[in-house]
Length: 516
Image 1: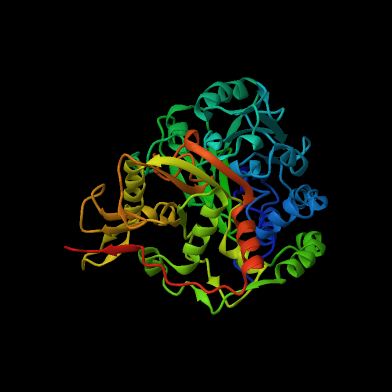
Image 2 (image 1 turned 90 degrees about the horizontal axis):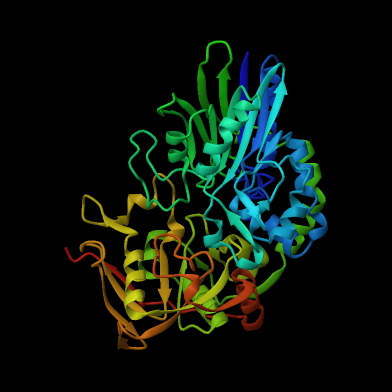
């Protein structure tokens, strides 16, 4: 007999195969993943099959924002969808807290099969169960839930009052043996985080800050039979060598594009890790029916015209936009800065799917261009620290074999991180990619004056960046002097409503050059 653990992670509220930008047959979505899961079960009638979700289920799409901000009466849909998928166990992701812990408790109730061992509120476990042991066909399988401890570095204090996110490796080292003593024959760890190390060599692939302790977990905690990961949106299915034997490990991307499959043969002990790509599975009819009423209201809301530009402002060349700044990025920077009274402002072009804006602007255009529920934060930093932030941005570029500017591979693999390259407005600067890191930025001026390294400047950033996320160590919420409670996407919508038609000019404050 075989045990199979099927997993989703980082669905982010992408239920239908709809990218909200016009493609209603996109190669992802929980509806497709549900069909893949149901068909797998039919194909393995004599095996034990568990289905788990690894977090980031209730936030991250136009639909989730619509529910949270405009139609909370639909919050119960998340539990209905979980029931239709057939999850046996679930755990929390960091984005579960984006709308506040009270909303989370409504969207993911106490009876939602949640296990989470390292999230605490007022000194007690936030959810009652740190783990569960399920007996099926005479086999007892334990599931331990863990969440990245880095949530407090990103989330607003009002969303996580008196909450603590403890070191998951330390928690697992205590509870995995306990699960064994309590009868678990096999232990599956569900960890909403990923890896800061190469899974084959153990060498660090990013700064070791504790956000993604998956490799450390596998190398230091004995007794783990299989590991489900997430958070990084990577595509992983492999056996990872550990001092305690090979551990099958998956990470199924995002938006339901993949379903992780961890398998253990109870007779031979053989183990494997695989992924089911869901793009060729027909969307589940019941899932579609569950969200059909909401989807109709959402489409009507998103297709409402709310503003106008003088012409189209689309992203025709993403590398060029990041090298030279772009009218839309500059506009978002200015709106963000005005929201907190800062003349200097930094933001990212999140990915290479963000389209930009056509002349006529709908709410749909807003939500596909600004993807996250970030707020604007102003911090006071010195000119020296501002220069360090610009140098951090300059890491984004490298030279290819022909000495042409390209994206630093570190921002592409093992995970895509375009969102960690910020472009700043309100300051002029040059990045010379031929120079070594930390010595690339020059000709920095503010209001036509050379930057004063000792002077204090007020800089607007997102609350995501405000604690130094992405290597921007100069930012820290202790330096924050103002935060606007409105989401930046909402600020953008307000600006379009109030100021249309809007004419933008090409920004010329950033130069990326190669003087080699």
